[in-house]
Length: 109
Image (cartoon, rainbow, N blue to C red; front, side, top):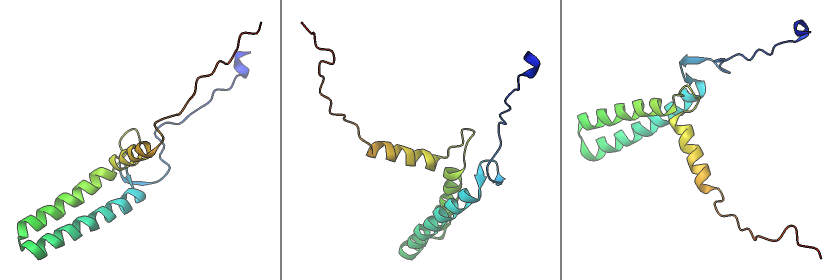
C-alpha cells in the first residue's frame, strides 16, 4: 500500500525572476536607479550651494551604495525597503478595536 503513495516535491530556492547577483533582480535594479537619481540630485544641490568636490562625490557614492544595499533581498526574500513598507503599512493600520463585552450565554431560568 505504501508503494501507491506519491510524495509531494516542493522545490526550495527557486527564484521567480532572473537575478543579476543573489537577491538583486530587475525590479531591484529599477528601485536602486531611482534611489541613485535621488542621491545624484542631493549631490548636485551640495555642489551648487557648497562647491565642495569631495563632499559631492562622497554623497553620491554613499547614496548609490545605500540604494543598492536597501533594495537587495536577503535569504528570507525581504529587503530593507520591503521591511520599511511593511512597518509603515502596519503603523497606518487599526490598532484599537472597540469591543463591548456582552454575555453570550445568559442564564435561562
